[in-house]
Structures are given as C-alpha cells and as structure tokens.
Image (tube, rainbow, N blue to C red):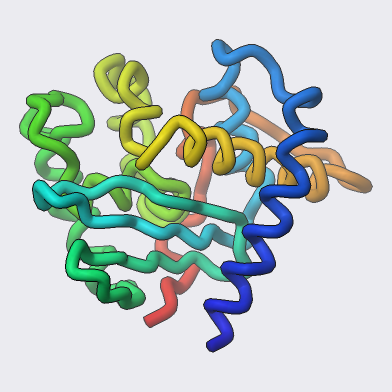
Length: 199
C-alpha cells in the first residue's frame, strides 16, 4: 500500500539523518523553540503513528514530515487503521473543551495516561490540524514539563525532533523563514484544518 511504502521511506530518512542532526541540534532547553520553527516552516503535513497501550491509554509511536497530515492508529489488539479527518476534528474539539475547563490530561496530569484525542493533540498532526488550540496548550507549564512523556520512548521523541529539524533545514534552503518564537509544535502555525487527514 502507498502509505506503507511512505512509512519505510521516512524511516530510512530518519535513521540516516539522526547522526548528522545531533551535531546541528541545540541544547535540550531549546527543544520547544526548535519545534516552533518546525511548525512554521514545514507546511505540508505530518504522518503520525499512535499506539494504544495495554492500559487503554495512547502514546505517540512515530511521526515524520509528510505530504499530507495523516494519523495511523495501532490498537492493542494489533489492528491498524487510518483515522478520518472527521474523527480527528471531533476529538480535538472535545479536547479543547477539556483544556478550557482544566480536565485535560495534557494540562492537568493525573497519571492516568492520554486519551486518543490528547495523543493526537500532543503530536505534530495535532499541531497542524488543531493549531487554533496551540496557545492554550503550549502556555501551560504542566504540558511543557511532560511533553516528552507523550511519546512511547525518549528515542521516539528524539527521532521526531530530528526528522522535523531536517525538514525545516531543507525547507529553509533558498528561502527566508519567519518564526514567532513560540514554544512547541503549535508556535505560530496557521494550518488549521486545511491539511486533509487521509482516511
């Protein structure tokens, strides 16, 4: 299938680029600003794989720059499916309400783990499709302090950061890029729902 082939391609890009990118990546304290630049310069989209955990919570397994924004869900029973844009939009709207009333696990962690909507919102796909929620999320200290824990492993977080940094560097070659300097993937993004999520 086309999307399986693309996953392989992005996996190769990510693994080859990690060594070189480690030298280009700044201090860990600059991670959020690096992700802000990603959101500003990588306009095409993100391919995100979210995995259901045995306790029913969800974590970001992998994410890479992509031509379109898509989310692949890996259920704990081993099945996989692409989420529709309608599903994602509905979940993001529900999570926005939880953020507003202080009941989101992203901004008010209780240790119960992320729901599917929260995992999407914490990913690069959420940053593109749900960019209007960005300031609510990334101005929250609780979210910033636990951002890495939204990923399946520290290695998954680093691969994500490195792959988007590579895309940012490629995109910035030959053209000036502007940055607002906001924290997180959401910083200054204005993609809204214009990037279709493949079904």
